Length: 107
Image 1 (tube, rainbow, N blue to C red):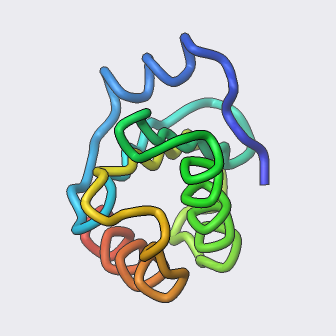
Image 2: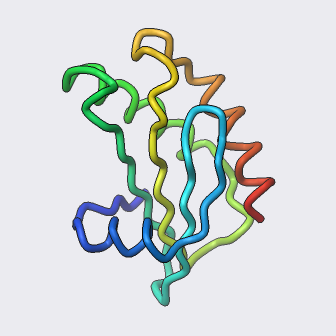
């Protein structure tokens, strides 16, 4: 999995990309001319301290890793955490289920 780290790439995907609203997070899809899928994860400071934010990102990263996307290449995908659950209640199965439903809605 290739991650997006540059601020301008996040801003471009968030401002010009199509998004799907889920229960726990938003998923932004932005088409690119690259031959790969790239992923970005955004968790705001209201979610908690660094340990809690990183835990949420680890769970989201694992859910993305195990998800089969209907497209193979050419997209930047940003997952933005909505801060509806405390970090200790974040569950892999909930995130995977929500991500699968969002992928079906998005494409």
